[in-house]
Length: 497
Image 1 (cartoon, rainbow, N blue to C red):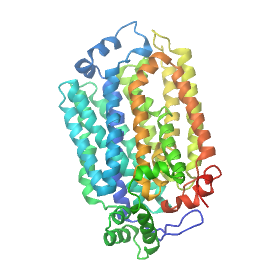
Image 2: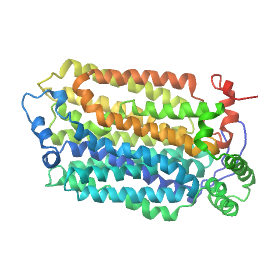
Image 3: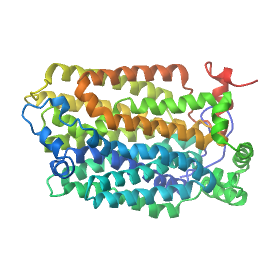
Image 4: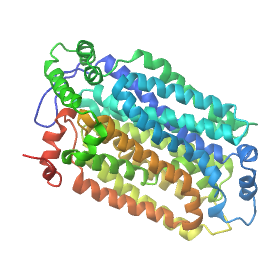
């Protein structure tokens, strides 16, 4: 379907169509999100499987089945949490390497490397015989996640027409939710099998293979080609993905941005030393910080553990997780429809409010009904908590989930784009590592008050959007500074006249 890419706000109009090539490139690249989502969804289910605990964490298995064990502390074990969190620690360093590799060699080769790392890690986890092999596989998966998360959102933002950049970029988050949903199905199906955890962990090879094969059918982004001196190829790709002959306006703007970028020898020094880079640096990094401290990964990593804590059986907890993840995927589709119409700020503020109410309510229910050594009796309270978690997850899925990746990918100028986006991805990985490593210990000590903490964080991040984040809908990336940061009441002082 041919649709002109006109910006919603006043400003430059870049002629473009929604072409098959753009859709194909964005869809294949977004499979990087499928890898990320599958890993997020698989780890919580695997760590609740008895066969997995018996093989690698027998002391946790014994503690889990003690009659008088503190409900909040059944899964409190640093090594068990390291199984989940080690991936994200590796991802931090991998993202840093990927930020340089992507600038020097292009987005496409970086995506290919991401799939190779992830595939190798999945094979190692499938064949793991001891804890060392298991953690080693997680580290390789982390390298794949680091390379993928650093590159895929930038790739999609650079290749998509400005008018439809939001919806196409949300495909990354949508496939994260599909990966989480697929993982919860796999966990449910393999939970009763002997060594079922091997099939769950080995299943990560499927999205990695899809991305590896698909990567050979995508184009490099015009901005990356021109930045590396391949002007003719960049012009050819731009004409192909835009579906129009009149590409000079956008081409000249990309060339102007790459000329500025070429003068920057140290992107990280440029990012931290120039005042005008502080607004996108602060906003992009804090968006990822707040995205993780919505509490979403508490639900995504440890939903089966959480439901078992409330007294649900293993199968019931896994079914509850499937339902929650289905809601997550469905709500993300709504974001694709709304993000380029309602705008980024509107969705972020609504999502923060919705998550605040549900987190506070869940905390109140657990405080009232879940005692230290006796599980919740009956089905009413766990059902109410499941419904509240679904409402909470839907609020995240159409707001902070996709927009936490989208907004940082579209606010940096080209000369510091890789460095700036690395800071956002690194913040994501650091916070995910902290939550993955310490949530079960925090649950043991803070109990239901942990949900009040996340509720308070949602209030803070909603206020952050109100006062500090400009609306980026429909604005070409190369014009973001001129049309948004320089006119924002709290950020304009960082720009010279």
